[in-house]
Image (cartoon, rainbow, N blue to C red; front, top):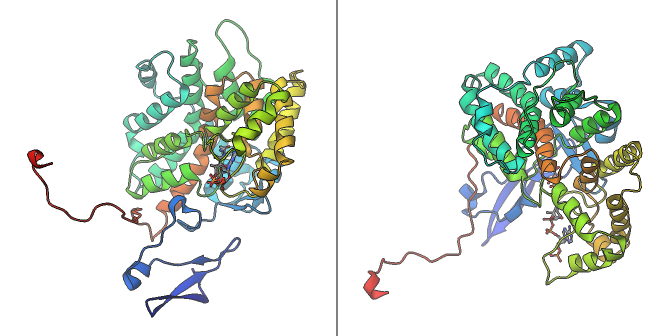
Length: 430
Ligand code: SDX
């Protein structure tokens, strides 16, 4: 990492030179790795709003321009011209595959989609009404018990096998979590179907009748996977990196990422957004909800709006909206009341100075829930679908971190504001 510039920090009359590194895109970074050793001070950045936790070559976001690049390729081009498994290859290996590389990769993923038959019993230990996210966190964490032969992170081949197993098996696990939650039999993956069609078939087919995947829905599903594949160092990816820095096995790291994604401020927002649209119910109630979101004394937020990095539109939301229009038209529900509420909410929010000033625009979760609901998924399957799609991003970042010769266990410090040392007092003296 070449650096040609430095910054001078002066504390109590002492000056310290801190290197500045310039990226290929985005802001310069101030290298503070030696700061505590030299100056005896920590930096303070709760929420890491101004902190680069690593260097990476995978994904770049320009929040002001509304730009998202995966290995340099703009997300709108990938969503429009590529497909999810090709994007997976680029995220994992750095370049778009040749035809031969893609065929081999797709064949490998296809042949890893079944899960160990004994894992079926694992599902049956959950309450019948267990939300699919709870089941997914448990089952993915348990993969280290069933696939112990791909948990040695120091073995390149095992890392590769674990990566393929996770990308291949997440749709199967998500579909099984869904089937279990609705009391229907599990549907095995089929090798004659593409990735998105396979997932739809495992979710919606039943033994009692033929199920034919609608190619437009499969295309929309594949596009949703692509739009959720990776997103720099977001909360769940940072969780995976931190878990991996201790040497934890890949399945444990991905389970940690799923757990973090679950929150409504992150991957749980697509479910929360649809539940919000249902609560609003009709366009005449929108002003009431916008007023609540603006009320400083009310911590209510409009789900699907705002983003830590995008202070302009989220390019994924733009593509997602196009898919929403296609799917709803196909299903003959273009006058879907939820979509009407969503469109009017977006219009009123963006016209409101509060949202404009705080640069709160619809994010990726704003339209995805509408598509998923129109496709027949219950809201508690929205975040599992996000987790499935994001697995390739988590795994790509996990691989990149393990290959970093500077890798250390992540161990942030703190600004301690508690009691200084004091003596223990016996209970009768308290
Ligand atoms: C994802 O990081 C990623 O890349 C995430 C993600 C990915 O692909 O991995 O993009 C996926 O998580 C998308 C975000 C999904 N979450 C939501 O839609 C939930 C609603 N959004 C908010 O919770 C919020 O916008 C966050 C968490 C997304 C971002 O919050 P920030 O950047 O930490 O900003 P903040 O909470 O400090 O808010 C800044 C101001 C505050 O007002 P003030 O205190 O300055 O007066 O904006 C307000 C907030 O109250 N605000 C909102 C709001 N979001 C922020 N007000 C109303 N509605 C909202 N949605």
